[in-house]
Length: 233
Length: 257
Image (tube, rainbow over all chains, first blue to last red; front, side, top):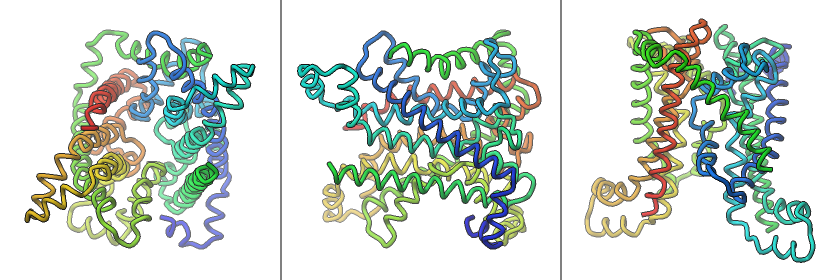
């Protein structure tokens, strides 16, 4: 496929990914994937923390529920979100055909990544260090910032990279909620789909190559980062 | 902190899920049953089952073989092979579909060859099976691999020295020890195959009553303002997903022994 994208020469490749429509789709995809990863870093860590350290009724159910976005077919995920945030939304928030809608759909499908990478690390984490810090008079925020968080960095980075990679390639869940308006809500995967349908495989292959390259770059840098972290101890 | 998490999950997960459940059964079970038993819906279910079962069968054979190759054998390019296995997880399903079209499409030599035989790959069932098997390949391999690594080669070597053939060794020694992992892999692969949308949407051509799967049915019905049918089919898929989650929780603890 990379060969197909390159077969017409580098200048055509550049031309294919810089058509205004392709460029807008790529920009929307990368920006929302980045924001989704950021939100997941904060909310995913928080959810993992609550699941490990907090105690309340129904925790087991909540724990199982987290996996649901993975188990649910993506097209169903899109439909589920449209039920609440669609045009006949019962709460009056309509995100259909809006960039926020795409954003929420991506948040939905990437929810488990950070939670599931951080959770096991938190379970294994020795609480003695925290107790020692507390006995030395450190406040809860200081303990979290200085003791807990540094231990979680590798797991958070891994989860964030995975949700970023997933978000840039997402198709099914964004297809219904975005309405696929070119220049506005069309993400890269949907743009590729449209180009295939309108018989422009070269344009589709060019944008696919960009997505592949970005995903590869993220996964390789994660690998490098983790090796570096292991070596540093 | 608990409050923030609850509110976030409520608006992202719980309320939308409950709402779609309510919308599905708003008018009772009757309409749901009727929209799932129309000719089109039944055909879509049939196609989905056909494609998924083939994908599971292919991945059971090739997934276990690939796992054994990676764990038990040394060959040039093994690291690359190992890394390539994970590729389907990082690539957009749409891109997978595109890659298949570029290889097997009607305008390529390979595609024309199969076309002349009377068995086109793209816009037909074989392409859909290939696409589904491709996106779900890592699930089987990654379930079986760690178990193979853990059990080691001693028992297999013992069987060899006692004169067992490769086939006997696999049947009597290797397979029994990986069967729980394989079962888990089958469940994951089946779940992924039933819910596959992007790759199948590209290679199937989305022809109603011909290559339409349940997930494609959901999209087509919703876009044709038949929300009831879309909700009913979604409920069907979601029920399977929940069933799979429960099954995974049941299968997990059994794995160590």
